[in-house]
Length: 275
Length: 201
Image (cartoon, rainbow over all chains, first blue to last red; front, side, top):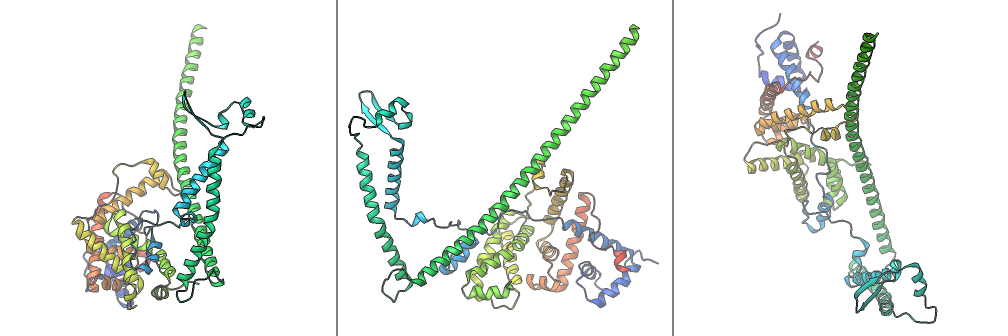
């Protein structure tokens, strides 16, 4: 016999929910089990709520990049006791950022100079105006003329400037390096006089480099995974396109076949009529 | 070696920044999911998630371990969600585009899923999102914590600060509303769990 109205003696809704989530005391569960065998109302409701749970189980949050995009900045921020997670991620400092600004500017000029040298830039300002030519833009027969065949010295004032700049850089860089080493040593051991890098500092640097490499490897792995995902995504989109195109082609083929069939029928009919 | 949350917390308090990073990696996804399902907006959920870890990080020295680290984190996240909802002064809305872009759908498809299956799945997801958005905050929170984070009724009661029976009642009421709304939105799902008949027998 089943009841049409539930007469469960107790907090029926609470027990039903506890039963639904299997978060219920064994004794209460046993009683409710017995009740369920007799009460179709509770059975139906339980079944319906299980269905709701089934639907809820399909609701997934979006899959995207890390919500805590700059978690490392928060972790690093421990020392400064500030660190906002919303702050933009400060990327790993590149080695060239350690070089003084003046040296970067000088290096840029040096690079331009070398590039100009390689390109064999020829800038002239005469009555016809300013003209700039590179070695590559000259005709091949003119290439021989660039060589001082008859002992004529080509005037290239930038070469001497370049040489001077290079000399200066060579002189300045070791000094800057020595200064940086001294500052680092002093910072690491404030009670001791400044000294060159010792074994401890070298070990620390090695550890830092090791850590950096490890992070780079994990980033690389992450990037590889992203690329694979992107490729899969693209593949899916392509498959849909192909699927659509195939459907279209099939449709067209079907229509064409029908026309052919109609034409053949017409020809057969016409030929039979003539006979 | 895998550290427990509590060990990682102790190491973080001791100054090991990597340990806190590990805690973030471990709990970022559940916290984001909690925030997303509670407030229903992806970008804001991301902000809440970040803010949760930031607050946790700042308050870490004060964490005495009376509760589980996860419960503590959930509490911070829930408080932030509550603040967000109060600030917005509106029912959570879900970012659900009205039109269905097949290309987007195809990009989201699992390899074994056809486009038709995917459309159905998306529709069902959207229906759930809409129905959840209709629930009062406390009912939605109870459902999210129970359904997706598998907390016990007692843990939920501790987290939200209400009696155990209230948690159950909220769940029941919320599920009942969802049942009605989902029935309106289309075909009902077959029971995912063991059948009642099977269980009672």
